[in-house]
Image (cartoon, rainbow, N blue to C red; front, top):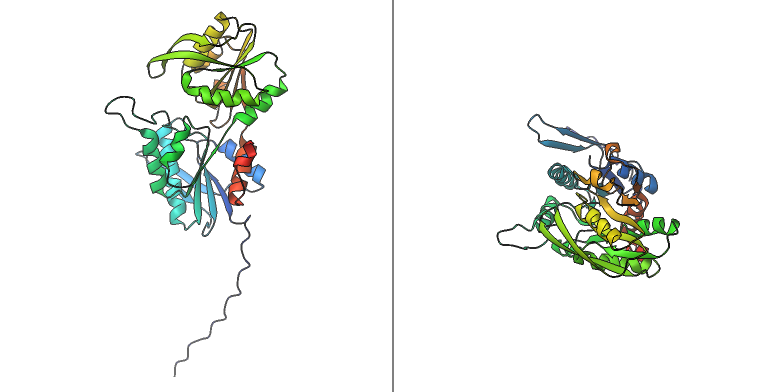
Length: 330
């Protein structure tokens, strides 16, 4: 008679703590920022293989078990935007197929955000298209910083946490102890952002630049609404791309009598010829954050880069622990 062997039952594994369920991975777009976030959280970046086939296709493999874990993927969709976006989608899909409990896409800079509505016939709304792609890839939550327009949150049918780089920029400006400050919006669309910035900067007065755009990346500055004569003007925007808007605005402010002009922006896109324009001397200082990496060849004398790693790290921890995120900005 054949008897089946009795196998010893395995000992039950100890329950996984909340901290142990947290996994952090980085795409190739901004590894230094992801490393800073990992240090803040007191964990290591997860091991991952990223490579490219001969025809340009991307390959991603997660190299540790993430079954039942809460995974956070840090990847700004900056230049080259298409490659960064595709890499993020592949990372999300890989984590979903590896049975992660939830995948959160941490997108410090959300690319394709400027086309958030139709302004002419036969246009694509790319901000919505990208939202659909990320959701369909398998993301369960989004964490983004300083969207080009806040309405993009509504393009997602999954939880969306929108955080702001303004506290970091404000702390730095306050440390400089500037006097007679006037906060300036470089266009009408940025008035709400500039107003909120001015309120937190000791209720500084607000001015607006009337700008009429002739084409994409081409702006014609018309006039200033508000008093800037003899004051320190602080231009506030979400991003600096080719720097045409910021630099033309700075020249206009100087013609209107501004004593000093500073520029603050969360995202340093810095497409050519931004560096030549920003380093021309029209601005006392250009203050940005590291949501997008700024390589050494794009540094110039007036540039200051502030880190958002602690802010993102604290936000990730609060999401993971089901704590309030909005209370960070009150």
